[in-house]
Length: 186
Picture (cartoon, rainbow, N blue to C red):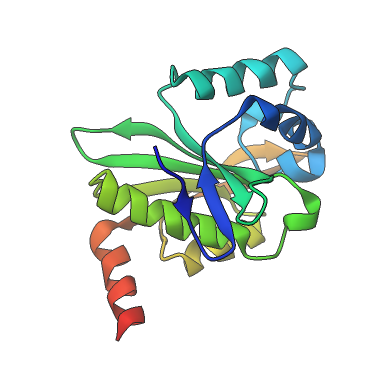
């Protein structure tokens, strides 16, 4: 698959050379705090290598991209589509910006907009969905800015650091994405 090129970033294939960059964040509680329960437990070198190898081989049900700097193709983070349902034309989106120095610079927002265009136009999906933890305000604002709508709350479903938090379910339909794109053009 060709790279998906944005203004400042590129969505590119996973590479074995990405493993050291992934290892920098995968056990960092500052980064993984807002991610799925998969990151509650430490990830070994073997875990990271196995995941990347699976992505390189194309043997995973997950279809994903590395978010990279456009000029150098250096790793910034990852953006994956999983639970792809080809019959009903929807997928779940997951994203992480893994480098502290790249947080808050709009790379996640740009990556999401690129994957939306790819998902709706190249894959002909009808819907993208995701979950965000209520305490992850930065991610929540990003998803709203990218056109995702709140569709529900799973009240106090998440337990972190002695407290329960809501999980916010969000989604965007192809028609909503296209309406935003048309408004930008006019």
